[in-house]
Image (cartoon, rainbow, N blue to C red; front, side, top):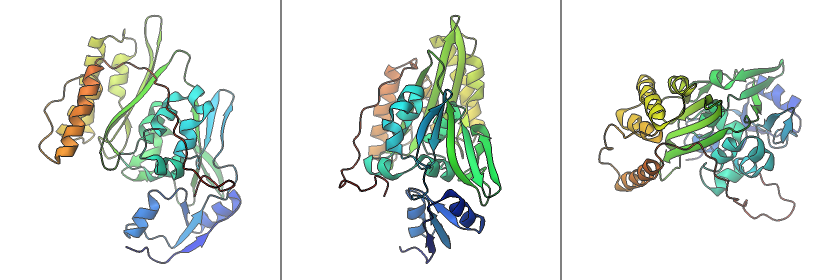
Length: 323
């Protein structure tokens, strides 16, 4: 289908962009979610503000031990950034698992988080990292904790006239181990279940543990029950199994179906309650292969596998990567 008519602006300053948003315009970042919705007429904005000419929104830097990521940084830029890999490997790993190479070269972290798809990858990692999200408007800026940012399905704490401009993440503590694993839809790459974990030991016990979950409920959430059970434990296979049992109850309360609850339990080191019902044979086969992989990793090891370089799409010299 063809989108309805709309006005288009491409300001070159953040002040000008925020002024347009204050008048009711809608922001356009990478367009990986908004443009398909407009073509299906699920979204019909009257005025779009293209943010790609606004300077500073795609920067990635380190300041005082904290990682500052501009909302327009692409998935590829985050995946391949040496700074991100060094200070926050969980975020680099997660970015590398999003969609395909075309999407990673154009899609942005800010657009993904503001869209708040309940099956998106970033929310699980952002929650596990206990990140802070910076919202800007003509009235100033405010910071929102990741746990308060995701309100409901496709709904966030961003108010009309506000723009997500920056994500701030503290560097992973020394000795921390991180992982992001998901069972994905083979066609779209979206997470049926995705779990992001950051954990650290001190004095022979688990001192830090944060677990973000996506794909199970109407919004991503922290598995706080499992976190509480693991903190202070030795982190043995039995401890992980006990924490997983508690997490299963939480996921059921969150609205996850029995099938996805089983898959989440397996990601955490337990057998699912039952096999998935017959459906698309390709989906079932893919899920079973993935389940087998995670079963071999039982109990899960909080280890970080180096991200494999994925080169951006070749473009003529001088052409911007973000199109």
